[in-house]
Length: 415
Image 1 (cartoon, rainbow, N blue to C red):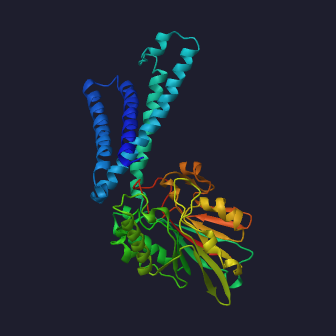
Image 2: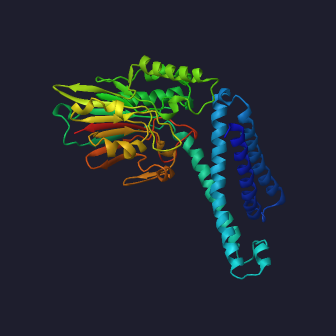
Image 3: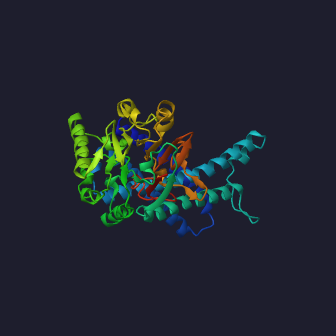
């Protein structure tokens, strides 16, 4: 399906949702003074109209070249409004279902159609559910606005990992793992520099980056290449590609332009001093011991994401190493291929999910909507002797913030 057709489907859904939610706003505003009611209605429809107009313009304009701040905050606002209305609509649907059941259960038809109003004894069930729905939707919108301030609040997580087969010379190895920079989303260079300073302050032996350097275009790194070039480690900095790095989500003039963009991105990794692993492995030496570091291109078990990686190529010859680390951007790769076919890959490092940049995390508890799509979506997972760590992401994309799931820098210590 082409972009204009998809855009118009989204617009129709947005308009239907607006009409549905407006019924709740109209109901709960009944006791308000007339001027206040008209103000509420006007604000609702002005915001809705701006969202629809923006979505109708995007497919026919060179949206990628709009000013970054305007582009990113417009999309963030539209997404936030849409999610808030979806939450509100879910409560309204409960009420509509209740009334359908009542009608089907034998109530007179006019009772189903009758508008329920505020009464002296309190508010009707419909009004109550409308209030609850609007409050929930407003709460979501408020949390998303609050999350704008969290997008550069980098959190350092220290994790100790124990392996029986780790060579003696590698005991105590400190690995700095980060993922998903998404440089095209950045708007505050000094804040990003602070994140890089935090990385370097850990004095890790080895630094591993697991993909999505950009949103889709290599030029996004122009302003930030010098910043990330400051990342160094005694045993080197290694990287892989993520699904966004291939430019699959951007409209290119021709195949050659897309190919050239990917090559430019590879060159950027090299110019920063990062060793980009493309379906290959390298030995890591410490003292008299050696382990294998494997890196593959993006490989996803989810149908919506690309599969460029080849474990067969990356693994060939790595059998000789007693301990192996795999960098693979998408954590769905672990269950789909790594565990069932490569049981001697001891540690897999991934990113990709960002923890959806939205969720709840407390000691011993974590939740995010992304867990209904990805079984492994944030933190450490273990199965038998194999371990997977999913980084929550250094950057952000789509929603310009984070609620509950903060940007992550991970320091892994092997014991």
